[in-house]
Amino acid sequence: MTVRIGLVGTGTVGCGCLEVLQAHRGDFLRHFGVDVELARVCSRRPVQAEAFGLADIYTPDYRDIVNDPSIDIVIELIGGTTVAHDVVCDALRAGKHVVTANKALMATCGEEIMGLADEFGCEIAFEASVGGGIPIIGPLKHSLIANQIDSVMGIVNGTTNYMLTQMVNEGISYEEALAEAQEKGYAEADPTADVDGFDAAAKIAILASIAFNSRVTLDDVHAEGIRRITTTDLDAAHDMGYCVKLLAIAHRTDAGVDVRVHPTMIPASHQLAAVNGAFNAIYVTGDAVGETMFFGQGAGSGPTASAVMGDVLEVARHIQHSCGPIVGCTCTDNLPIVPMENLQTKYYIRFTVADRAGVLAAMATVFAQHNVSVHSVVQRGVKNSDEVYIVYVTHTACEKDIREVLSDIANLEDVLREEPNVIRVEDR
Image 1 (cartoon, rainbow, N blue to C red):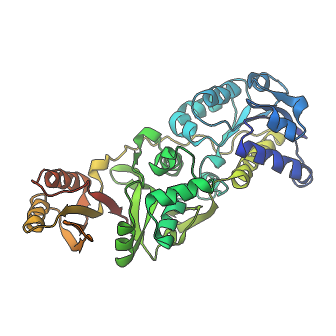
Image 2: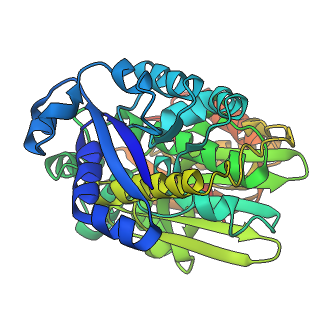
Image 3: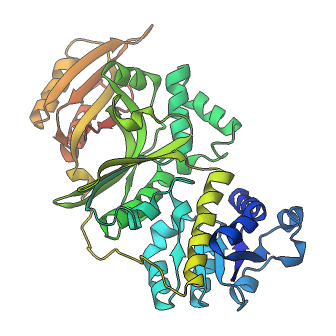
């Protein structure tokens, strides 16, 4: 059987898909009995199509693919939530199955897209939207479906994980680590989506929706990045038996879904603590399976193309056997999102304050006034300066109370020298 596909987008991942298809088309036919034929290629520039010898099927207009009745599957790889939205929705309305790697689109418009897929009897597959080549959406929707998933927690942004790894291993600053990541091609010229946590937030919104069978969107995710992390913080974490990772976290709680992205201290003994460089890992806990972890390359041409083409083959097999999606949208539980201010966890807080008598006592009074119990306090001097670092580690406290502590300490006269740095501690 021949299944015809149309590819929209020939950037890094799109070209990776073309390479996989050219290298393994015969294998796909031999192993699965499906001949996956590339029918049309769409991009803003014809040069990539020409490089693969595909000039004769190139088009600059995605509608030539959507409106072609012979095409069965549309692959959307242009990214973003504008034109990509039109490509995906128009394809579904035209009765075509869709494969996408677009995390932002699925995290913001997932409900609309899944609804269209259901309405028009089509399949929407998006394994590559989270974790690059790591299989995680498939396992959540198939292999782990017998479980109640209690938590999903992971390192899902390779850029920031590489930067934090280099800051620890090489003792370099955030700025130096970013420059190195950009030089190696891990970080974009504008790294905002990565370093401010927005990329990870889109991914955890998708994972939480699937894991908890409840709609979670990008706007529901509290996101903080790594811009304010320093080697001082990383050294302090090491001294306490922790390491710092930018974690995407989603927990099922009695109050609803606790979902967030922020720098997090995790015990050095935790499996995620050993995930370094540009690698990703996703840690899933279910009531029957217990603890599982999925590890691998989280980005790049090959790994992401692997996930995209895996989805293409899965959808092609469904077409071959005339069956619909095995698992469609499962977001039926409507669990509430737990407000960030209600979070209960431990906190690491580093203050830079004036080096004078009475400061420590005044700060201690503020913590006591808000019933925040302190586990430890460490004071470190700053060379050739009239400032000191004061590092607090709290017992479990409420986010709202911590924010009030920070506000009140900021209002103390001539105490703070810069904005405090807060890192949440995850011991679960």
